Length: 129
Picture 1 (cartoon, rainbow, N blue to C red):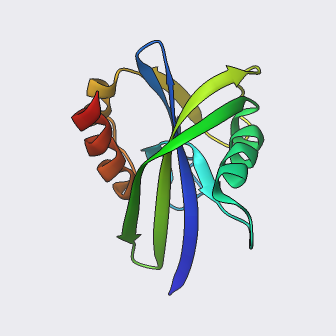
Picture 2 (cartoon, one colour):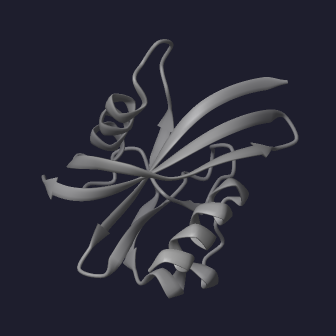
C-alpha cells in the first residue's frame, strides 16, 4: 500500500473558506476538498503547501497554525493529512489543476461531497468557528 504525507490549506477570507473540486480523472474524482497536495521528498510542509496552492490555483497564501492532522486509509493508499489554517494574500484564482472552486461558509461544508480524509478538518473547523 502506498503512503503519502499531504497538506491541505483551510484558506479563510471574509468568514468563508475555499474548497476545490478534484478533477474527474484523479483519485477521489469530483470530490470536494481543502486544496493542497503531496509533499515532495524532504520538503518542509508549509513550503510544500504554498507550492501546491500556487500550482493548483495560481494564488499566494500565508500558512499559519495546524488545524488538525488526519490519518486516513483508502482502499489503495494511506495518507497523513496536515491541515493548516491559511490566509489568501494575492493572485488571480485560477483552475490550474482542479475542476472547480467555491468560497463557502463553514456550515455549508456539510452539504458538499467532501473527500473522506477532509471530514475531520471540517469537524475541527466547525468546532472552533
